[in-house]
Figure 1: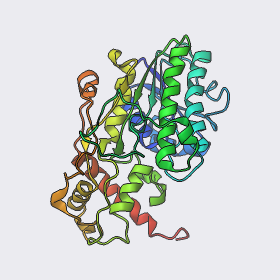
Figure 2: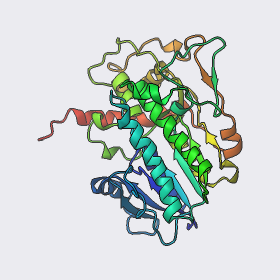
Figure 3: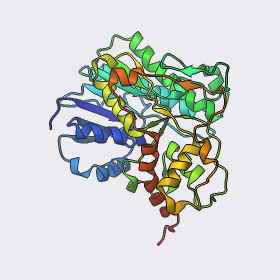
Length: 360
C-alpha cells in the first residue's frame, strides 16, 4: 500500500531504528536510511532485501554526523522529505571523555536540524530519539521519601561542567542525551523553522533484534541486549549464581518504541512534546524467571536467584508516570513477558556463535 510520506531515518542500522524502518516500510512509507558506512548499507540491504530497488527504500552514507553540512546531500530528495526521524547517537557505556559523547550527540542533532532548515524546507515534523537519561539522573541516589515519580516534565539535573569533569559513563552518556535533546528544543525556539519537533524518551529498551543474523557474536550485541546476555545467559554462568541487582527497573519493548516514533511523527497532537515511553517495571529477577521459562534447555546456566521476589524493589526507589503516551498517541504496550521471551531464543542462537572459532 502506498503512503504519501517520505521519511529520512538517521542511524538506521541501530537496534531501535531497524524496527522503525521495518514498520515504516510495512505501512508503505518511502524511507531513506542513513548510516555511517557502506558496510552498514550492505548489512541493511541483506536484512531488507525485498525492498531494495523499490521506491520504499534507498540509502545514504553520512560518515561523520558532526561535520558541517553532514546531512545536506542526504536531505535532498524528489519527492521531498516531510518527516525526519533522528535516531543516530553514540551509546557506549565505557569510560570515555565527555567530548566523545557530548560532541557527536549534540552536534549530530543540531547538524540535522540545520540541514533541514537549509535544504529541506518541506520537512514538517522531526522526531529525535532521546532517552530516560535526559529525564532522570541515574548517577544520583535512586531512593527518596516519598519516592520520586518521573514524568516527561522532568529533566536530568546534570550540568555541563559536571559532565565535562568526569569519564564516568553513568554521567557522561546521560549528559549527552540531555544536552542533545536540549539543543534540539533550543534550536526550534531560536530559529524560524518550518517543522514541529517531538522527542521519544525510552528507559531500558529490550526485546527481539530485528535481524539476529547480523550479530556475529555476543560482543556485537547492542548495549541493553548485551547486558541481559552477560548478566543472565553467559555460558560460564551457573544456575546457583546470584541474579545481579537491578540498576534500571523501567522498561519498554523495542517494537513499541519504534511505533512511538512513527506516532510522534504523524499524530497531530504529538508535536512540541516529549514522549516518555515507559511500559512498566522489569527487574533482573523477572528477566531471569522469563528466560528460565522460555529456555528450559539453559536451566543450568540461567541464575535462579529468588524467583518469588521478582517484583521486589528497594523502598523509596523512583517510579514513572506517563499515561499520555497511551491516551494521546494511542500506543499499546507489550508485556515484559512477551518482550523477554521473544528475545530469548535469539540470544541462545547468538551465544552459540561465540563458541565457534573464526577459522572453522
